[in-house]
Image 1 (cartoon, rainbow, N blue to C red):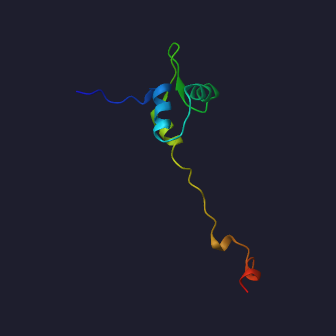
Image 2 (cartoon, helix red, strand yellow):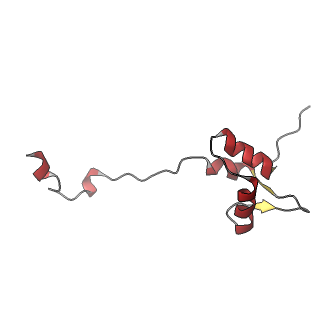
Image 3 (tube, rainbow, N blue to C red):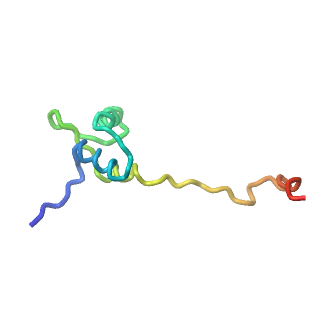
Length: 82
């Protein structure tokens, strides 16, 4: 019976997840992010582990708030149209 995947992964595995998404990030960069607090991490001994879900979330595109047509100043483009 296969073991369930742990939420904590090594920096090498995190770098591989980024590489699979065509985002090259080195292990040393991930270590810097972990030490800076940009990635939640644990360090039992010399190895650093980060959360798989957080790594995957970093690869998701940010949701951008769109501009509503009612937010545009009335008459802003009238000169261009006619």
